[in-house]
Image 1 (cartoon, rainbow, N blue to C red):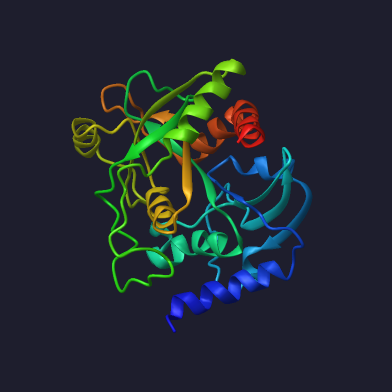
Image 2 (cartoon, rainbow, N blue to C red):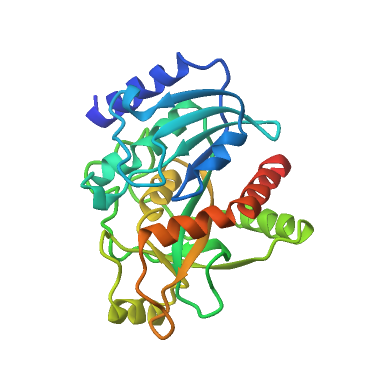
Length: 273
């Protein structure tokens, strides 16, 4: 049997033994956004270090635990902190939790991140619904042997981000008077921030925001047949004409300040979905 499959099954069974409900919605909460998991009721909290084969989260602003319980009438599983390629993990390790989520029953994934805005109108505190991504700086996590139980050899990515969920999110935002925009996300490997020449290249390619995560998880979620909604919290301007040198502390600070409207938006989406 495929080694990855064995690891996924063991991790999934460990989690199932800890809970008595089956989550249908998964949440991956990026830098500064993990407090949404504090809203989950009747929560079962499991540290990543306790779950077989889970990596450890090493980045400030990432709690490193799984929270499973009820949110707005739905059973959810939330990752308070994710894993990144730049931490030295393989993409198999980075995306391992998505495989495990699928194995315990999740069929919809809401993935969030902190990102730099490449458009001049995307200033700190903006919320961007991801309509697509340009994955040119991080290898594809599906490279290698394919297990048909995980998904097909050549998965379609023409609608990697669910139009249905984007439409719902836009409607919810309008009703809640929360300003959102839409755009294309471009991941870089990190941990360095992009040069100005690289940022100009991404703009020319059609990217609206840049970050260091998300695309690998979204690829694996699509491979497993999950519906995906992506939301970027714009924490700084990455437009080379107006930017100032970014730093992680400022990014987390802006993400923290944006939390109330972010939490309001996501909770209402979950309630209505």
